[in-house]
Length: 559
Image 1 (cartoon, helix red, strand yellow):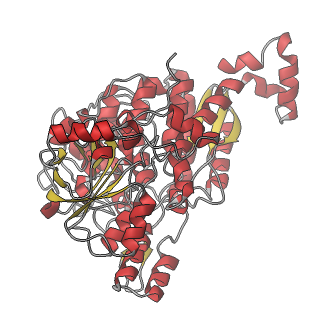
Image 2 (image 1 turned 90 degrees about the vertical axis):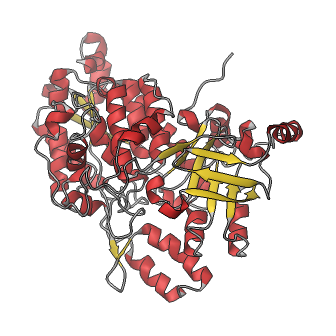
Image 3 (image 1 turned 90 degrees about the horizontal axis):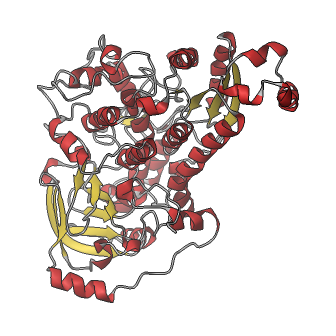
Protein backbone atom coordinates (compact mmCIF):
# COMPACT_ATOMS: atom_id res chain seq x y z
CA UNK A 1 0.00 0.00 0.00
CA UNK A 2 1.09 3.55 -0.68
CA UNK A 3 0.46 4.33 3.00
CA UNK A 4 3.13 1.80 3.97
CA UNK A 5 5.53 4.68 3.36
CA UNK A 6 4.44 6.21 6.67
CA UNK A 7 3.47 3.12 8.68
CA UNK A 8 5.78 0.14 7.99
CA UNK A 9 9.21 -0.70 9.30
CA UNK A 10 11.18 0.10 12.42
CA UNK A 11 12.26 3.44 10.97
CA UNK A 12 8.59 4.51 10.96
CA UNK A 13 8.11 4.05 14.71
CA UNK A 14 7.85 7.79 15.23
CA UNK A 15 5.25 8.06 12.45
CA UNK A 16 3.18 5.29 14.04
CA UNK A 17 3.44 6.96 17.42
CA UNK A 18 1.90 10.11 15.99
CA UNK A 19 -0.77 8.10 14.20
CA UNK A 20 -1.64 6.39 17.48
CA UNK A 21 -2.02 9.84 19.02
CA UNK A 22 -4.53 10.58 16.22
CA UNK A 23 -6.58 7.54 17.33
CA UNK A 24 -5.21 4.57 15.38
CA UNK A 25 -5.04 1.08 16.93
CA UNK A 26 -2.68 -1.79 16.17
CA UNK A 27 -5.07 -3.34 13.66
CA UNK A 28 -5.40 -0.09 11.70
CA UNK A 29 -1.86 -0.22 10.35
CA UNK A 30 -2.75 -3.11 8.04
CA UNK A 31 -5.67 -1.19 6.51
CA UNK A 32 -5.72 1.26 3.60
CA UNK A 33 -5.60 4.94 4.53
CA UNK A 34 -8.46 6.80 2.82
CA UNK A 35 -8.28 10.59 2.64
CA UNK A 36 -11.66 12.29 2.93
CA UNK A 37 -11.40 15.74 1.35
CA UNK A 38 -14.30 17.72 2.77
CA UNK A 39 -15.25 21.29 1.83
CA UNK A 40 -17.57 21.89 4.78
CA UNK A 41 -18.00 25.52 5.83
CA UNK A 42 -20.67 27.42 7.71
CA UNK A 43 -21.06 30.26 5.19
CA UNK A 44 -21.77 28.38 1.93
CA UNK A 45 -25.32 26.92 1.87
CA UNK A 46 -24.17 24.17 -0.48
CA UNK A 47 -21.69 23.06 2.17
CA UNK A 48 -23.28 23.70 5.57
CA UNK A 49 -24.50 20.09 5.77
CA UNK A 50 -21.24 18.46 4.68
CA UNK A 51 -19.94 18.00 8.24
CA UNK A 52 -22.71 15.48 8.95
CA UNK A 53 -22.53 14.15 5.39
CA UNK A 54 -18.86 13.26 5.88
CA UNK A 55 -19.71 11.25 8.96
CA UNK A 56 -21.71 8.85 6.76
CA UNK A 57 -18.75 8.50 4.43
CA UNK A 58 -16.24 7.93 7.23
CA UNK A 59 -18.39 5.37 8.99
CA UNK A 60 -18.84 3.41 5.75
CA UNK A 61 -15.07 3.44 5.18
CA UNK A 62 -14.49 2.09 8.69
CA UNK A 63 -17.10 -0.65 8.24
CA UNK A 64 -15.50 -1.70 4.95
CA UNK A 65 -12.07 -2.06 6.54
CA UNK A 66 -10.36 1.24 5.83
CA UNK A 67 -9.06 4.09 7.97
CA UNK A 68 -10.68 7.44 7.06
CA UNK A 69 -8.75 10.66 7.54
CA UNK A 70 -10.91 13.73 7.04
CA UNK A 71 -9.34 17.05 6.05
CA UNK A 72 -10.85 20.29 4.86
CA UNK A 73 -10.46 22.63 1.93
CA UNK A 74 -11.73 26.18 1.65
CA UNK A 75 -14.94 27.11 -0.18
CA UNK A 76 -15.99 30.49 -1.60
CA UNK A 77 -19.68 31.24 -2.05
CA UNK A 78 -19.87 33.03 -5.39
CA UNK A 79 -23.25 34.56 -4.62
CA UNK A 80 -22.02 36.14 -1.40
CA UNK A 81 -18.71 37.16 -3.03
CA UNK A 82 -20.54 38.70 -6.00
CA UNK A 83 -20.22 42.39 -6.84
CA UNK A 84 -17.26 43.33 -4.64
CA UNK A 85 -13.57 42.57 -4.18
CA UNK A 86 -14.39 39.12 -2.84
CA UNK A 87 -15.38 37.85 -6.29
CA UNK A 88 -11.78 38.23 -7.43
CA UNK A 89 -10.86 35.44 -5.03
CA UNK A 90 -13.39 32.96 -6.40
CA UNK A 91 -11.64 31.55 -9.46
CA UNK A 92 -8.20 31.68 -7.81
CA UNK A 93 -9.65 29.60 -4.95
CA UNK A 94 -9.79 26.70 -7.43
CA UNK A 95 -5.99 26.61 -7.37
CA UNK A 96 -5.79 26.78 -3.58
CA UNK A 97 -8.23 23.87 -3.31
CA UNK A 98 -6.22 21.83 -5.81
CA UNK A 99 -3.06 22.64 -3.85
CA UNK A 100 -4.72 21.59 -0.58
CA UNK A 101 -5.80 18.19 -1.95
CA UNK A 102 -2.36 17.60 -3.47
CA UNK A 103 -0.59 18.69 -0.29
CA UNK A 104 -2.59 16.53 2.12
CA UNK A 105 -2.54 13.42 -0.07
CA UNK A 106 1.15 13.65 -0.89
CA UNK A 107 2.32 14.59 2.61
CA UNK A 108 0.41 11.74 4.27
CA UNK A 109 0.60 9.07 1.56
CA UNK A 110 -3.11 8.27 1.39
CA UNK A 111 -3.97 5.15 -0.58
CA UNK A 112 -7.15 6.66 -2.01
CA UNK A 113 -9.33 9.76 -1.88
CA UNK A 114 -13.03 10.45 -1.44
CA UNK A 115 -13.77 14.05 -2.41
CA UNK A 116 -16.83 15.70 -0.88
CA UNK A 117 -17.47 18.87 -2.86
CA UNK A 118 -20.48 20.81 -4.09
CA UNK A 119 -20.28 24.43 -5.20
CA UNK A 120 -18.60 26.46 -7.93
CA UNK A 121 -14.77 26.21 -7.82
CA UNK A 122 -14.61 23.46 -5.22
CA UNK A 123 -15.48 20.53 -7.47
CA UNK A 124 -13.04 21.42 -10.27
CA UNK A 125 -10.38 22.36 -7.72
CA UNK A 126 -10.62 18.92 -6.14
CA UNK A 127 -10.52 17.27 -9.58
CA UNK A 128 -7.30 19.12 -10.39
CA UNK A 129 -5.77 18.03 -7.09
CA UNK A 130 -6.87 14.42 -7.56
CA UNK A 131 -5.32 14.33 -11.03
CA UNK A 132 -2.01 15.52 -9.62
CA UNK A 133 -1.96 12.88 -6.88
CA UNK A 134 -3.46 10.18 -9.13
CA UNK A 135 -4.53 7.64 -6.54
CA UNK A 136 -7.93 5.92 -6.74
CA UNK A 137 -10.52 8.68 -6.19
CA UNK A 138 -14.29 9.00 -6.16
CA UNK A 139 -16.42 12.13 -5.86
CA UNK A 140 -19.66 12.46 -3.95
CA UNK A 141 -21.15 15.93 -3.77
CA UNK A 142 -23.57 17.46 -1.31
CA UNK A 143 -26.44 17.75 -3.79
CA UNK A 144 -28.59 20.58 -5.13
CA UNK A 145 -30.88 22.89 -3.22
CA UNK A 146 -34.64 22.63 -3.70
CA UNK A 147 -36.22 25.43 -5.72
CA UNK A 148 -37.98 28.23 -3.89
CA UNK A 149 -41.56 29.35 -4.30
CA UNK A 150 -42.91 32.86 -4.83
CA UNK A 151 -46.05 34.07 -3.04
CA UNK A 152 -48.01 33.39 -6.26
CA UNK A 153 -46.90 29.75 -6.23
CA UNK A 154 -44.44 29.96 -9.11
CA UNK A 155 -40.85 28.77 -8.81
CA UNK A 156 -37.93 30.96 -7.72
CA UNK A 157 -34.20 30.61 -7.19
CA UNK A 158 -31.17 32.78 -6.49
CA UNK A 159 -31.29 34.30 -9.99
CA UNK A 160 -34.87 35.41 -9.35
CA UNK A 161 -33.53 37.51 -6.48
CA UNK A 162 -30.70 39.09 -8.48
CA UNK A 163 -33.06 39.89 -11.36
CA UNK A 164 -35.54 41.30 -8.86
CA UNK A 165 -33.03 44.04 -8.05
CA UNK A 166 -33.22 45.24 -11.65
CA UNK A 167 -37.01 45.04 -11.58
CA UNK A 168 -37.13 47.25 -8.50
CA UNK A 169 -34.84 49.74 -10.25
CA UNK A 170 -37.12 49.79 -13.30
CA UNK A 171 -40.28 50.13 -11.21
CA UNK A 172 -41.62 46.73 -12.21
CA UNK A 173 -41.42 45.37 -8.65
CA UNK A 174 -41.69 46.88 -5.18
CA UNK A 175 -39.07 46.42 -2.50
CA UNK A 176 -41.64 44.56 -0.40
CA UNK A 177 -42.18 42.08 -3.22
CA UNK A 178 -38.42 41.63 -3.54
CA UNK A 179 -38.17 41.02 0.21
CA UNK A 180 -40.70 38.19 -0.10
CA UNK A 181 -38.73 36.56 -2.92
CA UNK A 182 -35.44 37.01 -1.07
CA UNK A 183 -36.87 35.18 1.95
CA UNK A 184 -38.09 32.15 -0.02
CA UNK A 185 -35.80 31.68 -3.05
CA UNK A 186 -33.19 29.51 -1.29
CA UNK A 187 -35.25 27.29 1.04
CA UNK A 188 -32.78 24.47 1.83
CA UNK A 189 -29.11 23.67 1.99
CA UNK A 190 -27.43 22.53 -1.21
CA UNK A 191 -25.98 24.02 -4.37
CA UNK A 192 -28.29 26.61 -5.95
CA UNK A 193 -31.18 24.88 -7.66
CA UNK A 194 -30.64 25.75 -11.34
CA UNK A 195 -28.13 24.65 -13.96
CA UNK A 196 -25.56 26.99 -12.53
CA UNK A 197 -21.84 26.27 -12.24
CA UNK A 198 -22.01 23.99 -9.20
CA UNK A 199 -24.71 21.72 -10.54
CA UNK A 200 -23.22 21.79 -14.04
CA UNK A 201 -19.90 20.49 -12.74
CA UNK A 202 -21.53 17.94 -10.45
CA UNK A 203 -23.55 16.56 -13.35
CA UNK A 204 -20.47 16.46 -15.56
CA UNK A 205 -18.71 14.31 -12.94
CA UNK A 206 -21.12 11.51 -13.88
CA UNK A 207 -20.35 11.82 -17.59
CA UNK A 208 -16.60 12.03 -17.06
CA UNK A 209 -16.74 8.92 -14.89
CA UNK A 210 -15.62 10.31 -11.52
CA UNK A 211 -18.94 9.98 -9.63
CA UNK A 212 -21.79 7.51 -9.28
CA UNK A 213 -25.16 7.96 -11.05
CA UNK A 214 -27.36 10.44 -9.18
CA UNK A 215 -24.43 12.54 -7.99
CA UNK A 216 -25.48 15.60 -9.99
CA UNK A 217 -29.23 15.60 -9.39
CA UNK A 218 -30.36 13.93 -6.14
CA UNK A 219 -31.34 16.89 -3.90
CA UNK A 220 -29.28 17.64 -0.80
CA UNK A 221 -32.26 17.03 1.49
CA UNK A 222 -33.42 13.85 -0.26
CA UNK A 223 -33.15 10.68 1.89
CA UNK A 224 -31.31 9.01 -1.02
CA UNK A 225 -28.33 11.37 -0.65
CA UNK A 226 -26.79 9.65 2.41
CA UNK A 227 -27.18 6.28 0.65
CA UNK A 228 -25.27 7.69 -2.32
CA UNK A 229 -22.54 8.84 0.08
CA UNK A 230 -22.29 5.37 1.60
CA UNK A 231 -22.22 3.74 -1.84
CA UNK A 232 -19.37 6.02 -2.90
CA UNK A 233 -17.42 5.18 0.25
CA UNK A 234 -17.79 1.46 -0.40
CA UNK A 235 -16.93 1.82 -4.08
CA UNK A 236 -13.52 3.31 -3.30
CA UNK A 237 -12.38 -0.17 -2.25
CA UNK A 238 -13.31 -1.56 -5.65
CA UNK A 239 -11.26 1.21 -7.25
CA UNK A 240 -8.35 0.28 -4.99
CA UNK A 241 -8.62 -3.37 -6.03
CA UNK A 242 -8.67 -2.37 -9.71
CA UNK A 243 -6.02 0.35 -9.21
CA UNK A 244 -8.32 2.61 -11.24
CA UNK A 245 -7.05 6.18 -10.94
CA UNK A 246 -8.23 9.62 -12.10
CA UNK A 247 -5.87 9.75 -15.08
CA UNK A 248 -7.31 6.42 -16.23
CA UNK A 249 -10.75 8.04 -16.21
CA UNK A 250 -10.09 11.61 -17.37
CA UNK A 251 -9.22 11.11 -21.03
CA UNK A 252 -10.04 12.75 -24.34
CA UNK A 253 -12.95 10.30 -24.63
CA UNK A 254 -14.45 11.06 -21.21
CA UNK A 255 -13.97 14.81 -21.64
CA UNK A 256 -15.84 14.52 -24.92
CA UNK A 257 -18.67 12.78 -23.05
CA UNK A 258 -18.71 15.50 -20.39
CA UNK A 259 -18.89 18.32 -22.93
CA UNK A 260 -21.58 16.48 -24.91
CA UNK A 261 -23.69 16.39 -21.73
CA UNK A 262 -22.87 20.05 -21.19
CA UNK A 263 -24.13 20.88 -24.69
CA UNK A 264 -27.26 18.78 -24.20
CA UNK A 265 -28.15 20.71 -21.03
CA UNK A 266 -26.80 24.20 -21.80
CA UNK A 267 -24.66 24.20 -18.68
CA UNK A 268 -22.72 27.06 -17.17
CA UNK A 269 -20.09 28.69 -19.37
CA UNK A 270 -17.70 28.16 -16.46
CA UNK A 271 -17.65 24.44 -17.30
CA UNK A 272 -15.53 25.36 -20.32
CA UNK A 273 -13.00 27.13 -18.12
CA UNK A 274 -12.83 24.21 -15.71
CA UNK A 275 -12.98 21.51 -18.38
CA UNK A 276 -9.96 22.99 -20.16
CA UNK A 277 -8.08 23.19 -16.86
CA UNK A 278 -8.93 19.55 -16.11
CA UNK A 279 -7.72 18.53 -19.57
CA UNK A 280 -4.47 20.43 -18.99
CA UNK A 281 -3.89 18.75 -15.62
CA UNK A 282 -4.63 15.33 -17.12
CA UNK A 283 -2.20 15.95 -19.96
CA UNK A 284 -4.97 15.76 -22.56
CA UNK A 285 -4.85 17.99 -25.65
CA UNK A 286 -8.35 19.47 -25.86
CA UNK A 287 -8.43 22.71 -27.91
CA UNK A 288 -11.24 25.18 -27.31
CA UNK A 289 -12.43 24.96 -30.93
CA UNK A 290 -13.32 21.30 -30.41
CA UNK A 291 -16.34 22.39 -28.39
CA UNK A 292 -17.99 23.73 -31.54
CA UNK A 293 -17.44 20.34 -33.18
CA UNK A 294 -19.19 18.63 -30.27
CA UNK A 295 -21.96 21.22 -30.28
CA UNK A 296 -22.61 20.71 -33.99
CA UNK A 297 -23.63 17.07 -33.43
CA UNK A 298 -25.21 17.36 -29.95
CA UNK A 299 -28.81 18.51 -29.65
CA UNK A 300 -29.96 20.50 -26.62
CA UNK A 301 -32.58 18.21 -25.07
CA UNK A 302 -32.84 19.58 -21.53
CA UNK A 303 -33.18 23.17 -20.38
CA UNK A 304 -32.99 24.14 -16.73
CA UNK A 305 -33.08 27.51 -14.96
CA UNK A 306 -31.83 30.08 -15.95
CA UNK A 307 -32.55 28.97 -19.55
CA UNK A 308 -36.16 28.30 -18.50
CA UNK A 309 -37.58 29.55 -15.23
CA UNK A 310 -39.83 26.63 -14.26
CA UNK A 311 -37.38 23.68 -14.43
CA UNK A 312 -34.77 23.00 -11.75
CA UNK A 313 -32.33 20.22 -10.95
CA UNK A 314 -34.89 18.40 -8.80
CA UNK A 315 -37.03 18.07 -11.95
CA UNK A 316 -34.13 16.60 -13.91
CA UNK A 317 -33.70 14.04 -11.14
CA UNK A 318 -37.39 13.17 -11.26
CA UNK A 319 -37.23 12.86 -15.04
CA UNK A 320 -34.50 10.23 -14.96
CA UNK A 321 -31.36 12.15 -14.07
CA UNK A 322 -28.11 12.48 -15.95
CA UNK A 323 -28.11 8.81 -16.91
CA UNK A 324 -31.37 9.34 -18.81
CA UNK A 325 -29.92 12.28 -20.73
CA UNK A 326 -26.79 10.30 -21.60
CA UNK A 327 -28.86 7.27 -22.57
CA UNK A 328 -30.91 9.42 -24.95
CA UNK A 329 -27.74 10.94 -26.45
CA UNK A 330 -26.33 7.45 -26.92
CA UNK A 331 -29.09 6.72 -29.41
CA UNK A 332 -27.13 8.83 -31.90
CA UNK A 333 -24.28 6.58 -33.07
CA UNK A 334 -20.83 7.92 -32.24
CA UNK A 335 -22.02 10.85 -30.15
CA UNK A 336 -20.74 9.37 -26.87
CA UNK A 337 -17.71 7.25 -26.11
CA UNK A 338 -19.62 4.43 -24.43
CA UNK A 339 -16.53 2.33 -23.70
CA UNK A 340 -15.06 4.99 -21.40
CA UNK A 341 -14.43 3.52 -17.91
CA UNK A 342 -16.10 4.99 -14.82
CA UNK A 343 -15.86 4.70 -11.04
CA UNK A 344 -18.80 2.29 -11.15
CA UNK A 345 -16.35 -0.35 -12.41
CA UNK A 346 -18.34 -0.49 -15.64
CA UNK A 347 -18.13 1.44 -18.87
CA UNK A 348 -20.30 4.49 -19.37
CA UNK A 349 -22.50 2.51 -21.75
CA UNK A 350 -23.05 -0.23 -19.18
CA UNK A 351 -23.69 2.31 -16.42
CA UNK A 352 -26.51 4.08 -18.29
CA UNK A 353 -27.96 0.98 -19.99
CA UNK A 354 -31.07 0.74 -17.81
CA UNK A 355 -31.84 4.47 -17.67
CA UNK A 356 -34.91 5.99 -19.32
CA UNK A 357 -36.71 9.30 -19.66
CA UNK A 358 -39.55 9.54 -17.14
CA UNK A 359 -40.78 13.02 -18.07
CA UNK A 360 -40.32 14.09 -21.71
CA UNK A 361 -41.37 17.61 -20.79
CA UNK A 362 -38.10 17.93 -18.84
CA UNK A 363 -35.79 15.66 -20.85
CA UNK A 364 -36.72 15.70 -24.50
CA UNK A 365 -35.96 13.06 -27.10
CA UNK A 366 -33.54 13.40 -30.00
CA UNK A 367 -36.57 13.83 -32.25
CA UNK A 368 -37.90 16.78 -30.26
CA UNK A 369 -34.89 18.87 -29.13
CA UNK A 370 -34.88 22.50 -28.07
CA UNK A 371 -32.25 22.99 -30.76
CA UNK A 372 -30.39 20.71 -33.13
CA UNK A 373 -27.05 21.91 -31.80
CA UNK A 374 -25.66 22.28 -28.30
CA UNK A 375 -26.38 24.85 -25.61
CA UNK A 376 -22.88 26.38 -25.53
CA UNK A 377 -20.97 28.05 -28.35
CA UNK A 378 -17.41 29.28 -28.87
CA UNK A 379 -17.25 32.52 -30.86
CA UNK A 380 -14.14 33.70 -32.68
CA UNK A 381 -13.44 36.98 -34.46
CA UNK A 382 -11.43 40.18 -34.41
CA UNK A 383 -12.49 40.88 -30.79
CA UNK A 384 -11.74 37.32 -29.65
CA UNK A 385 -9.14 35.67 -31.91
CA UNK A 386 -8.53 32.99 -29.26
CA UNK A 387 -12.23 32.52 -28.56
CA UNK A 388 -15.10 33.54 -26.29
CA UNK A 389 -18.01 31.64 -24.74
CA UNK A 390 -21.79 32.12 -24.80
CA UNK A 391 -24.55 29.99 -23.29
CA UNK A 392 -26.57 29.82 -26.52
CA UNK A 393 -29.31 27.80 -24.79
CA UNK A 394 -30.08 30.88 -22.70
CA UNK A 395 -30.28 33.28 -25.66
CA UNK A 396 -33.65 34.27 -27.12
CA UNK A 397 -33.79 32.87 -30.70
CA UNK A 398 -34.53 36.38 -31.98
CA UNK A 399 -31.15 37.56 -30.62
CA UNK A 400 -28.87 34.93 -32.09
CA UNK A 401 -27.70 37.50 -34.60
CA UNK A 402 -27.14 40.97 -33.13
CA UNK A 403 -25.53 44.21 -34.21
CA UNK A 404 -25.22 47.16 -31.87
CA UNK A 405 -23.19 50.12 -30.72
CA UNK A 406 -20.34 49.49 -28.32
CA UNK A 407 -20.60 51.08 -24.88
CA UNK A 408 -17.22 50.52 -23.24
CA UNK A 409 -16.47 50.24 -19.52
CA UNK A 410 -13.04 49.69 -18.00
CA UNK A 411 -14.44 47.68 -15.08
CA UNK A 412 -17.57 45.97 -13.81
CA UNK A 413 -18.05 48.74 -11.25
CA UNK A 414 -18.18 51.38 -14.00
CA UNK A 415 -20.87 49.38 -15.77
CA UNK A 416 -22.93 48.90 -12.61
CA UNK A 417 -22.84 52.65 -11.97
CA UNK A 418 -24.10 53.30 -15.51
CA UNK A 419 -26.85 50.73 -15.09
CA UNK A 420 -27.96 52.40 -11.86
CA UNK A 421 -28.29 55.66 -13.81
CA UNK A 422 -30.18 53.83 -16.64
CA UNK A 423 -27.50 54.83 -19.18
CA UNK A 424 -27.56 51.46 -20.94
CA UNK A 425 -30.10 51.59 -23.75
CA UNK A 426 -31.58 49.14 -26.26
CA UNK A 427 -29.12 48.44 -29.06
CA UNK A 428 -26.03 48.79 -26.89
CA UNK A 429 -23.27 46.18 -26.96
CA UNK A 430 -21.86 46.67 -23.47
CA UNK A 431 -18.11 45.96 -23.24
CA UNK A 432 -16.63 45.29 -19.79
CA UNK A 433 -12.87 44.81 -19.98
CA UNK A 434 -9.79 44.48 -17.76
CA UNK A 435 -11.71 41.85 -15.77
CA UNK A 436 -9.92 38.75 -17.12
CA UNK A 437 -7.72 36.31 -15.18
CA UNK A 438 -4.84 38.81 -15.01
CA UNK A 439 -6.72 42.06 -15.37
CA UNK A 440 -9.41 41.42 -12.75
CA UNK A 441 -7.43 39.88 -11.32
CA UNK A 442 -9.27 36.63 -10.85
CA UNK A 443 -11.79 36.91 -13.72
CA UNK A 444 -14.80 37.97 -11.60
CA UNK A 445 -18.31 36.87 -12.52
CA UNK A 446 -20.75 39.41 -13.94
CA UNK A 447 -24.03 38.22 -12.47
CA UNK A 448 -24.90 41.64 -11.07
CA UNK A 449 -24.78 43.53 -14.41
CA UNK A 450 -26.40 40.71 -16.39
CA UNK A 451 -29.21 40.38 -13.84
CA UNK A 452 -29.72 44.16 -13.81
CA UNK A 453 -29.83 44.27 -17.62
CA UNK A 454 -32.47 41.55 -17.66
CA UNK A 455 -34.35 43.05 -14.72
CA UNK A 456 -34.49 46.44 -16.48
CA UNK A 457 -36.20 44.81 -19.46
CA UNK A 458 -33.11 44.94 -21.71
CA UNK A 459 -32.45 41.20 -21.86
CA UNK A 460 -33.27 40.87 -25.56
CA UNK A 461 -32.06 44.27 -26.75
CA UNK A 462 -28.61 44.59 -25.13
CA UNK A 463 -25.52 42.40 -25.48
CA UNK A 464 -22.76 42.14 -22.87
CA UNK A 465 -19.21 41.20 -23.88
CA UNK A 466 -16.39 40.77 -21.38
CA UNK A 467 -12.99 39.22 -20.77
CA UNK A 468 -14.41 38.33 -17.36
CA UNK A 469 -16.88 35.50 -16.89
CA UNK A 470 -20.49 34.90 -15.97
CA UNK A 471 -22.33 33.11 -13.23
CA UNK A 472 -23.94 29.86 -14.24
CA UNK A 473 -27.14 31.71 -13.48
CA UNK A 474 -26.64 34.09 -16.38
CA UNK A 475 -28.95 33.94 -19.40
CA UNK A 476 -29.22 36.21 -22.39
CA UNK A 477 -26.81 37.58 -24.98
CA UNK A 478 -23.82 37.48 -22.64
CA UNK A 479 -20.43 36.61 -24.11
CA UNK A 480 -17.53 36.02 -21.74
CA UNK A 481 -13.99 34.63 -21.56
CA UNK A 482 -12.92 36.91 -24.44
CA UNK A 483 -9.33 35.93 -25.21
CA UNK A 484 -6.72 37.31 -25.26
CA UNK A 485 -7.92 39.49 -22.39
CA UNK A 486 -7.48 43.26 -22.34
CA UNK A 487 -4.62 43.11 -19.82
CA UNK A 488 -2.65 41.04 -22.31
CA UNK A 489 -3.29 43.58 -25.05
CA UNK A 490 -6.06 41.56 -26.66
CA UNK A 491 -8.27 43.31 -29.25
CA UNK A 492 -11.01 43.86 -26.67
CA UNK A 493 -8.67 46.52 -25.22
CA UNK A 494 -8.89 48.44 -28.51
CA UNK A 495 -12.69 48.68 -28.80
CA UNK A 496 -14.08 52.22 -28.45
CA UNK A 497 -17.52 53.46 -27.52
CA UNK A 498 -19.47 53.96 -30.74
CA UNK A 499 -17.88 51.07 -32.67
CA UNK A 500 -20.33 48.71 -34.34
CA UNK A 501 -20.32 45.20 -32.86
CA UNK A 502 -21.61 42.16 -34.73
CA UNK A 503 -22.52 38.90 -33.03
CA UNK A 504 -23.55 35.85 -35.06
CA UNK A 505 -24.00 32.83 -32.81
CA UNK A 506 -25.01 30.40 -35.60
CA UNK A 507 -21.85 31.41 -37.51
CA UNK A 508 -19.81 31.39 -34.25
CA UNK A 509 -18.43 34.90 -34.85
CA UNK A 510 -17.84 38.03 -32.73
CA UNK A 511 -16.45 41.12 -34.48
CA UNK A 512 -16.22 44.89 -34.42
CA UNK A 513 -16.72 46.75 -37.68
CA UNK A 514 -13.34 48.47 -37.70
CA UNK A 515 -10.77 48.02 -40.46
CA UNK A 516 -7.42 46.40 -39.77
CA UNK A 517 -5.41 49.59 -40.30
CA UNK A 518 -7.43 51.45 -37.69
CA UNK A 519 -6.96 48.56 -35.26
CA UNK A 520 -3.21 48.73 -35.76
CA UNK A 521 -3.21 52.48 -35.10
CA UNK A 522 -5.11 51.87 -31.86
CA UNK A 523 -2.72 49.09 -30.90
CA UNK A 524 0.24 51.41 -31.34
CA UNK A 525 -1.40 53.88 -28.94
CA UNK A 526 -2.39 51.29 -26.31
CA UNK A 527 -0.60 51.34 -22.97
CA UNK A 528 -0.97 48.47 -20.53
CA UNK A 529 -2.51 49.76 -17.29
CA UNK A 530 -0.83 49.16 -13.96
CA UNK A 531 -1.95 45.96 -12.18
CA UNK A 532 -4.81 46.57 -9.76
CA UNK A 533 -3.30 44.29 -7.11
CA UNK A 534 0.40 43.50 -6.76
CA UNK A 535 0.63 41.90 -3.30
CA UNK A 536 -0.67 38.80 -1.55
CA UNK A 537 -2.35 35.84 -3.17
CA UNK A 538 -4.07 37.82 -5.93
CA UNK A 539 -0.78 39.49 -6.83
CA UNK A 540 0.91 36.10 -7.22
CA UNK A 541 -2.08 34.72 -9.11
CA UNK A 542 -2.11 37.59 -11.61
CA UNK A 543 1.59 37.00 -12.25
CA UNK A 544 1.22 33.27 -12.94
CA UNK A 545 -2.24 32.78 -14.47
CA UNK A 546 -2.75 32.08 -18.17
CA UNK A 547 -5.52 32.94 -20.61
CA UNK A 548 -9.14 31.86 -20.22
CA UNK A 549 -8.80 30.06 -23.56
CA UNK A 550 -6.40 27.70 -21.75
CA UNK A 551 -8.62 27.29 -18.69
CA UNK A 552 -6.92 30.06 -16.69
CA UNK A 553 -4.41 27.55 -15.37
CA UNK A 554 -1.32 28.74 -13.53
CA UNK A 555 2.15 28.20 -14.90
CA UNK A 556 5.60 28.90 -13.52
CA UNK A 557 7.42 31.75 -15.27
CA UNK A 558 9.68 30.59 -18.07
CA UNK A 559 13.37 31.14 -17.37
